[in-house]
Length: 594
Image 1 (tube, helix red, strand yellow):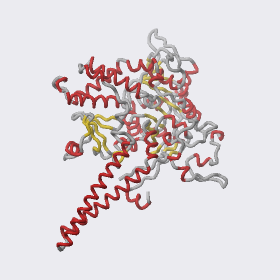
Image 2: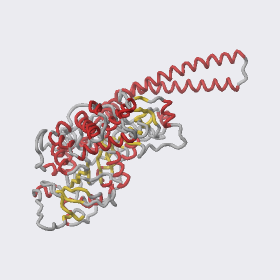
Image 3: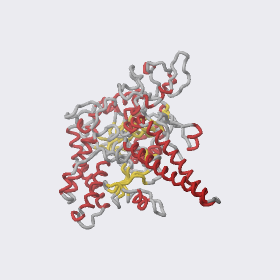
Image 4: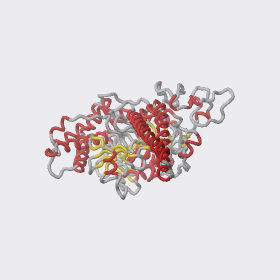
């Protein structure tokens, strides 16, 4: 059984081959610059040697300070202070616990020649209290006015903190589930009513064939955007259970879920959400002043940068202008393309995850940035236009900095960036299935998952050490009492005892059974208290009881690195060698005193 890892920053090894020198003349503009080590002036002004900052403890001089156990404790890093990027002269402070990059598989950044990013919920972190609430309200209106749902639901409101990622919706039964990494249901709600242990066992435990908990009967809540529709689904389940007469015949939980999904799609198709964001980006998107410095540092280190998003060009231009500081809230940035200088290639309307399949035959169009016109290309090379159509080309300084495309597939991207081996690419995204799983399993790209919830989770973990010790002690005590009970029961059943001995053992057994019940209640109450410190309903994001949660299991399987926000990359050397912490088997914990 694989045990949880300590929260140490580490990383991944990749045997990447050098990029091929063969490419067409038209693509020479996009050949990655030769990587080079940052100048000495980028090193922090501290007592550590260069080797320490590369992740190694070798080479510490006599006069240099060796980090103590307290210094290396992740929970002792300051949680405040400046967010100066690694390459700045002033850099050198400890990285706050919630800003660290954590590693599942070793990754040597020297082998990476291109770093790519998703936009929505990766580069652009949306505010749940405004953006998700707006999406929720729009979905409710579509249900009422387009799909004929009762007008009472127009009065509902959205609690942006109720749902968490990693949950599973049971469409047939109207249940919301949280599972461990073995797909055992540990927490379950029908609508907003918590299901008893007996209900969970009878529904999901007493079967001859294990349920896969996958589509089409189940929906996976793996993106932040899907939290609003999960909350609305739970509200509708409760409402229908209490008011069945308000729904037409034939409407069941599965139909309700399909209607919610249809309403969400309607909100996207009519452009209402994106128009609202475009009018006031600062109201819906968190500002992050480290994005441009991070991109500049990566490019200065000799790496190409690219953006692959499912959003179309008009919306991408608005959002990226805001993120790159080219406009403030309530400004019209439609004609500003300076943000493109931070990238080598931008691909919009990519239709991920199908984009990651080379057999995907989607055409690749070049986007004329000023007009949004789509130009035909042959694998990225412009095709002569037929007729009188004469597209306006972007300004010269932008033409050389970046080209914008729509559609295509990953083979087009590899050619545009002169990628010889897929392991030379690091891709950063927020969606386990849309960004990370496909790019990792299908291509072999190196991956980093953005988990905004992680920042609060690790900080709460640091504060819960005493509670975790108490839980371990109660569990050990519970095991000890149960062992004694089992031994006494065996003796009473098989040993030859006189009346006094039997009475004495029976009396001791009764006391132990009372003690077991007392310890069991204390243990369960302490465990519930511990998990409720993270979330009142669902507990820790990365845990379900003592096991890693289903979400944590996916993060561990498919993400080489994971962190709370994309710009945490700016806090580390672009040549850093990320190394994972050591794995431990259960027998090692007791032997090594872990």
